[in-house]
Amino acid sequence: MEASSIDVAYIAELAKIELTDEEKSRFTRDLDQVLNYVAQLEKWDTEGVEPMYHPLPVFDALRSDIPGESLSNEDALRNAPMQEDGQFRVPKVVESAH
Amino acid sequence: MEMTDKPSLASLRRLLLEKQVTPVELVEMCAARAEKENPRLNALISWDKERALRAAQQADLSLPLGGLPIAIKDNICIAGEPTRCASRMLDSFVSPYDATAVRRLKAAGAIPFGRANMDEFAMGSSGENSAYGPTLNPADPSHVPGGSSSGSAAVVAAGIFPAALGSDTGGSVRQPASHCGVVGLKPTYGRISRYGLVAFASSLDQIGTMTNSVEDAALLLSVLAGHDPQDSTSSLEPVPDFAAGLRDGVRGLRIGVPKEYMSGGNAPEVADALQRAIRTLEEQGAEITEISLPHAEAAVASYYIIACAEASSNLARYDGIRYGFRDTSATDPDTLFSRSRAEGFGEEVKRRIILGTYVLSGGYYDAYYARAQKARALVAQDFAHAFESGVQLILGPVSPTPAPKIGARDLTPLQIYLADIYTIPANLAGLPAVSVPCPAAPPLPVGVQLLASHFEEPLLLRAAAALESAWS
Image (tube, rainbow over all chains, first blue to last red; front, side):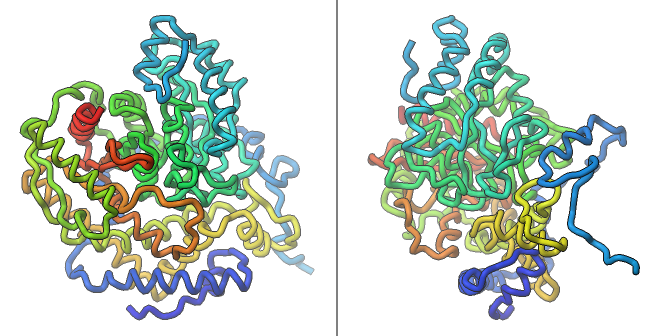
């Protein structure tokens, strides 16, 4: 893999974090260095190696689908920075139809 | 009664049972120590004395941890108390429920008391990445305590609390334990439920303990371990009494020392601690053999790709709407997300989310993420081969150096990440590991690390206890 310069501005848009120009240039420098380092993974022979997504094989981690205790509407909203009528308040999401 | 400088849970329990001290007096003593020491160390973000006193008044001493105050890292939920992850993002967050680990502590009679400072969202290894200011090392306040469970290690090392819970994603319990001179245990992945531990990297995170003795680590693990229907990755493995057999010694045990861990890159104090551990274990009748972990060098690269990828996904939940910091200037949802996250997250958290988003993004997934998962398998296989070859435990350093000076900001993020080389492999492979303080050259403590096969905590703690007792 080519350790090409990471497009931090684009990635920050995907990650939904507004960055200052100073942060963009600092993160580009820092992360280029990290990506250069991790490029060493190329040197290990991983032919036929199964990727390991989990440290232990977990099988059949299912349980009965019985509703347990849940938070009340009031408790679930207690940490919301803005709420109204028992719901989370958000900025307008859809344009008006007219 | 006067509490000793660094009290153990076991000794305080005896005093409570002998009625030499009451649970209320014990809480008062811990609070007095917090008031005296915290302005100097900044190890606690907050502590609620009144709440702890109410719990102490109802303490049931017949329970295994009856009346014992325990500090909780700020990323483990306590119902009705702030859980801030040392982040501006969660500055006003009050947890609506108990983490399973906290629920189990309470059910065993313990009093969760004190929110331990940490690196923000557990991302860091110095304790300096906290929105509430850095924690200082009790052994020498011009040095860092390590991280990310910085406050958990510092409160136990300073004798403010007899024990603390931390979390360990790449060494965040073991490394600060080593830097502060306490016992830091990271159990096998899945031993302790992660329900209510604020997620950083779900395939690596594990709750662990900070204590002043190996026996205390065993006492806590016996209470904390066990399956939890709320965490599908928690193990169904039977939970033994981890304190039984602690004094059985290491005679006849085969302990491997990886040659890759004996590199010239270790500071003299660290190399010396390792040599002392080898000598002590041999004197106690263990057989020490050199082993090889040929893919040791792949661990750091694999870890930072996986941990950041999982973090970018886990931290997507902080949207400024359901909980957490909200920017009030935004008039559309996208700007609301982007500005809330820009202002709520600190620098290291942003850096890791960006890295994680990048390695998961279109065109780069196979080159980074898929390759890192394969390298992770190679690292885990090295351990499996070592244990198959007949060693029962592995001995190594915890960190290449003792605790660095506060404010060593000339290091690049990569240089900081590379110092996690000895602690990361246990997380990648899901193995239990413990840091035991070595009576090394003062003033800075240095620990050594023991690792065992999955669910072999009894053996791990037995060897740790043998080192501890020979060194005390």
